[in-house]
Image 1: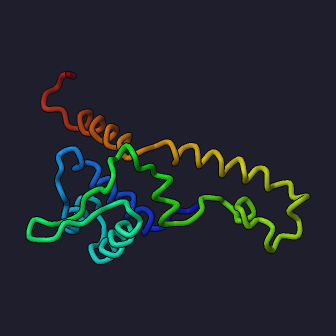
Image 2: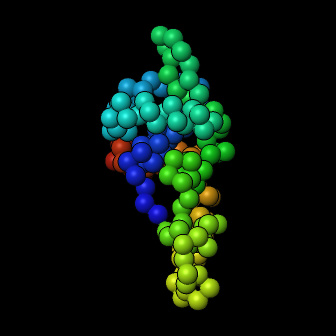
Image 3: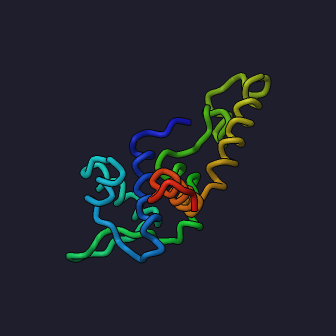
Length: 152
């Protein structure tokens, strides 16, 4: 499995919107692009795709922008990765079309290994929600930028 820039930016965009979710705020494309260090034009395409996928919604007007279509606790990394990138299998023979084009499928010594790798990746990406990431972000922010030199 390899995450392209498209997948990386989609994940970053959803995280930026998840950070604003509890405040009920929308974020403009420029705000999302700036905070996630992403090119605006490419982000526009990604956000439209995420909108079609039911991950985000758009609000028109002067104070318009994008916001999450569902709570961050209801969106996993795995959902987004599969929607943008496709299957997460490290090799095609692990997927459902495994019998297409492979003459060695029944005796292959590696297929079971790749199936385990795929299952392990799935466990991680399918259990981490964007709410989990928001909590981790807040924890990191508190640790990195303390107001005083003592812990709270």
